[in-house]
Amino acid sequence: MITDEERERILGSEIEAVSEAIEEAVALAIEEHRRLGNSIAVWRDGRVVLLSPEEIPPYAGKSRSGR
Image (cartoon, rainbow, N blue to C red; front, side, top):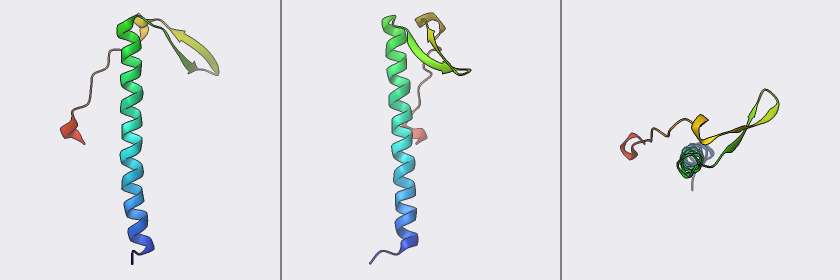
């Protein structure tokens, strides 16, 4: 039987992995918008602001070995 501590440790590492995957997916989607010449909407100072493709910073990437 798995203890509560073991369950929390396992879930914590799984949550971290899922969070990293989501962040990577969002970064790739934003990069795709930039490459295709599409604007994106961001929340800045309490308002929605549209960023032109030129204003979107290029995606630097994350190596898979860094995980």
